Image (cartoon, rainbow, N blue to C red; front, top):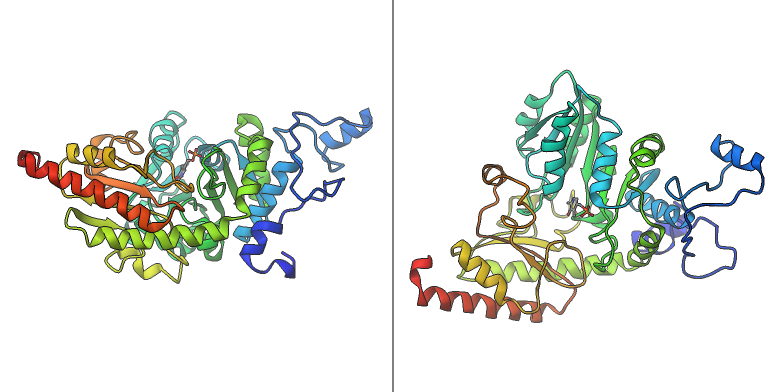
Length: 405
Ligand SMILES: *Cc1c(COP(=O)(O)O)cnc(C)c1O
C-alpha cells in the first residue's frame, strides 16, 4: 500500500488500479468479455505456461475483476484475493481447496445457514469430518482438536444473535496447531474488523452485502496470502468454476467507493434503533454488540471498531405475533440479506436458518420469536417511527386476543 493510501477511506476509492485503462477513464473500464485474443500462437502458449503475464479466459482472470481483488486485499491488509460468484462460492472454494477425504474441520456451531448446510450435509458425502463447537468456549475448541484437524472456520459477530468470538484466540490456536484459519468477515467489513491483525489465514466475504451495498449483486471474495489464493484459483475456482462476472465486479468496485461513509451511517443508525428497542416494553432481549447489555460489548473499540448494522431482538409474543408484527412494517422491507441502503427485516427461524433442523436451531440459540433487522441508510427517525407503529399494532392485537400470548 503506497503512502497516499494510508487511510482505509482512500483505499476504498483508489487502491487496486491495474493500469489496464488505455483511455484514462475515471471509472474502472468494464472488460465484459469471455476470452482474450492472443497476438500469436507463441504468446498463447506462453500465457498458458505462465511464462508471460496476461489474460486468457475470464474464468481464470479478468482485468475488471482483478481491480476488485486488489482493492479488497489492500483493505484487509493481505497479499491477494479471489473474487467469486457468490458468498457461498467463496465459502466452498476456500474450504474445499484445503480439505480432502479423511480431514477434520472445526467449525463454529452457529454460522451462516448455508455454510452450516455445506459443512454438515455436503462434506459428509465427501468424507470430511466436521465438529461444530461453541467458540465462545475456548476449552471446547481445544477439546475438538484431532490428529486429522486441518482447518478452523468461524464468523464473528455470529448471525443472527451477534455473538462475538475472540479472533486473537482463534488465530493463535490455529498457528499453534498448524490449522488453516478462515474467518467470514461479511458482517463488519475490513473497515470495522481486520482478522489479518490476528494472524487469520483466509478472510472471506459475501460481497452481496456491505461491500457492494446496493442490493443488486450476488458475489463473494476470499482474501489471503499469495500462496493460499493461488492454490484456490488453480483448483476449486478454476475447476469448480464459481468465479465472478466482470459486470458484478464492476458494480462492487463502484459500491466500495462509498463503503466508509455507508458503514459509519449503518453503525450510527443501528445503535439508535437498538437503544430504542431495548427500552420498548413489547421487546425482550436485544442482540447488538453496541449495547452494554451484550456480551460482545467488551470487544468494541478493540477487535471491532464498531458494532455494524445488523441486530436481532426477541418479541414478547408468539410466532403468530412475530409474523403479524413483520407484516405491519411499512418502511422495512420484508427480505433476507443485509448491508443494503434499504432497511430489511426477517424471521430467521422460518427464513435464513430454515436449513437448520428445529434441534439445530435450538442449539444455535435461534428462537421462534427472534426477528433480525439490517438497519439501512434511511433517516433513523423514520425507521424508529415505523417500528413504533408496528409494535403498537402488535400490542393492540395481543390485547384483543390475549390467548395468543
Ligand atoms: C449472505 C452470507 C453468506 C453467503 O453469501 P451469498 O452471497 O448469499 O452466497 C455467507 N456468510 C454470511 C455471514 C452471509 O451473511
